Amino acid sequence: MKSKNNLLIAFIYFVAIISPAFAASPRPVIAQNGMVVASESIAAGIGLDILKQGGNAVDAAIATAAVLNVTEGYSSGMGGGCFILIYWAEDDQVYAIDGRECAPFKAFRDIYIDKKSGKPIPDVSTEGITAVATPGQPAALEMIYKRWGSIAWADLFRPAIAVADTGFPLSRTYAEKLSYFAQRLYQYPANRGIFFPAGDTLPYGFGDKLIQKDLAKLLQNLASRGTEWFYDSDFTREFVNFVKEQKGFLSLNDFLTYQPIERQSIHGNFRGYDIYVMPPPSSGGIHIIQMLKILEPFNLSYWGANSSETIHILIESMKRAFADRAYYLGDPDFVDVPIAGLLDSAYLDRQRNTMKPYQASAIQGPGSIPQEESSQTTHFSIIDQDGNMVAITSTVNTSFGCGVVLPGWGLILNNQMDDFSIQPGVPNYYGLIGSEANAIEGGKRPLSSMSPIIVLKDGLPAGIFGSPGGPRIITTVLQTFLNIVEFGMDVQEAVDCPRVHHQWKPNVIFIEPGIPNDVLANLIAKGHEIIPNGYWSSAQCIWIDENTGLITGGTDSRTEGAAVGY
Image (cartoon, rainbow, N blue to C red; front, side):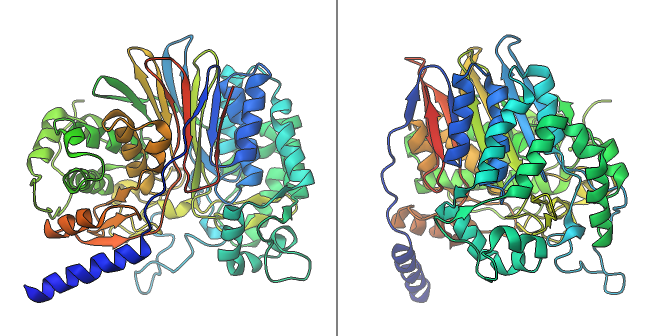
């Protein structure tokens, strides 16, 4: 017993050294008419300009996404995919648009498995052209524009074209990403002329101007010729020929047949709030509602945010949701995802009843659900003066995607194939375990953790949430929502509050700096294993003050975003 206590004291001392107290949050940004909250300030400002010019939330979203392709291209862009949630006030409806990437038709279940060893081939699903899936973002943006856009399509791209053509000073975050991935990026000749000074093996640094002439040319063609140019033109054939030369899998047919999909959003409720989330192939939406329904009977506000009691209950709900994710979730066009069973009240009651109030539980696998009758990234949130809301989470997967830029066009390509289950039971880049439901198949969309959320209260707009962060997106959005609704934080406090994460496997709690040491000691005493981490994710949130009707915005202080309104 004495040695165990000594180990506990040593652990707390270690955490105290590496975990400075979390600084007080600034005040939220407040506006009356409209707001854009994004993880990069240039993009947020341009989105706001579109709103001020009379554009609606969809117009502003397209312009913001285009600029993020330039100023935060390591996270998202036209070479990747996205999920879009839209609340349209005139219809009083929430719409879900799936712009997720698709596996090439040449792909098959064991495409990344070594035939001799039967084990995954290292890196081929994460690095290089073999990791690329068919991009979906251009088509998804055009889909929402044709339905709701009000400003000329080309005008929405002009700011992004200008920023790419004339350049912008690198932020601290972008410079750190370039430095960290420099060796990987340098191996591809097309990257050197973009991210590295001439003749230098070190990339541009903080404050240096990043000019992307080739990307400006790509955006100009999208602006003037629409997305048909992207999916069926000489450009497409050049793209496909490059992939073929590099022994990748994308073909012309993958581009010609790609379509974004309008899906039925999933609806849940918590404490009188109506919550609308993305359906599969997003896993985040279902599991956020699962966790909220498991948590609802607990008096979390009595225990307080980030108390050991609250964190324990949160972690136990996370374990059960992620175990279900690993087994049941996949592309609903290819597998039968049991949505009703996963959200069944009796099932969630049983899951809650397996939780022990003062002891960590070991979850062996998914719950037994009832059968149904007849399964690196960026985010931004926007609201306009008419109450229309748009939440977009967009990605090229890991930072700089597969590391390849399309020569002559400056387009960073995704490595989304790694989001499939390369081999059931084998973890992907983020440590997530998958099953046959998320196995690779040509034309299939990989499971995603992207979790944009729209919240209504009494039929009126209440909030818009989202974050990057791989599987930590799901738990980030959950905790941000609870911080406001359950713990009474303002929107800026809610996005800044230290977070915890558990994804079933590995069976550990990842903890950000700022959680009190006595809380850590109590969690360890309950049987939890803890791994102290740095900061993760970047929540971007809008919340409507119920008393005044004012729009409040919070951009995560972990990154260099902006909340701007008027």
